[in-house]
Length: 285
Image (cartoon, rainbow, N blue to C red):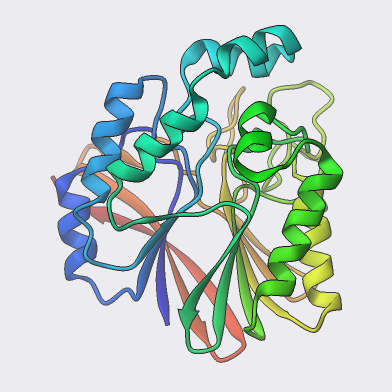
């Protein structure tokens, strides 16, 4: 099985991408979120382009998806009154996203069957990292998740609902436990003290899945961009305790160099009980 993993899009998706993946031999396309950037209108246009995909596709919403700028600012400052005020209409905006992407499945605290005895477990949607339960009003309304403990319970329930022995986790932000340096997969690059910026509820769910006898082949996420603040480049993949971890957030994913336009994605191949990932830099207008 071959899967195309698409990092944070931030509006960078075109009909060239759609045509390429429709003509490819990938079995499915998985999006780690952040289709939108700061514009709801442009985000919906990018989302509607995804609806033209013929391949099976799955998207977990990121912290920019169906979010307006004031709402994101409220979450960054962690001011409860502003969070409540700016969250008005969030669930309706998520519904508009789900309608715009057409046949692309929108996941979150959910299990998705890929076939061949393989499931994808979609983690907590709209994660902003550092284990904070961001966008809590929407998570409470849509999923009954009010607290970190609620999120852990929902993720464990997904593990229990999965009937496959082999599983992948799809999340917007990755889990804790993979390093606390600025260039680690989900290390903090915007604070002098650095730190592990992963999600602890996702780590608990991964460990729980393994305790239940699941074979976790890979954990696929993004959010923490490859290009580091202050210079340098983040590691994008690693094996840890036999599990492949991939951060696909090469931003911008469409860029130009002296030879032309380049489109980025990650090629994930699964052979039996092993997963392997390769970055793909594809040229095209």
